[in-house]
Each structure stands twice: as C-alpha cells, then as structure tokens.
Length: 98
Image (cartoon, rainbow, N blue to C red):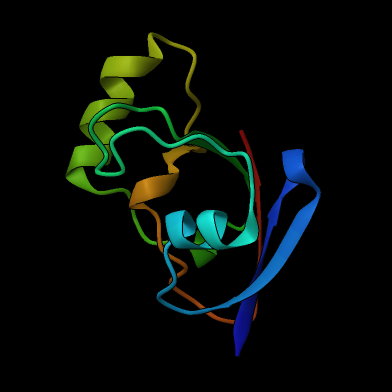
C-alpha cells in the first residue's frame, strides 16, 4: 500500500510506502526542491502542503521552532520543512508546493 506524493512545481508524482521521508522522495525523483542542512535547522526546504496533511507525520519540535524563526508571518499552518516530514499513512494523496 502506497501514498501518492505530488510535487506540483516539478510536475512529479511518486507512489511511496509508509515511513518514506519527503527528503528521500525528492532526492530519488530528481525534483529541484532545494535542501540546505538536511537536518531541520536552516529552513531552506520549506514547502506548502496543498493537500494530504493527514497522511504526513506531525511537526517535530525542531520544525515548529525553525518555522517560527524563518517565516516572519509568511508561513501558514500548512508550511512544513520537507526534511522533517514522513509519509505516515498509506492510501492517500499528498500535494506539495515549494
């Protein structure tokens, strides 16, 4: 059972297993979504979850802290750090935009 992850900017759609990280998906797919530190410290990989938040892991404490620091009012409740997200449930659709 898989979840479909679509990266809107790159016109990519990938079916992935539960537990896959968005960072791994992006790197394997050839997406141009940028990464910096790959550890949730820099905020380079911030994305908007257009749909499917319920199929993703909850925000980590580190992610909440970094989003508060980097967003200056520009983030929404659907803003996430892609290096911190995992697909947590099967049979869904997640749409990401960077």
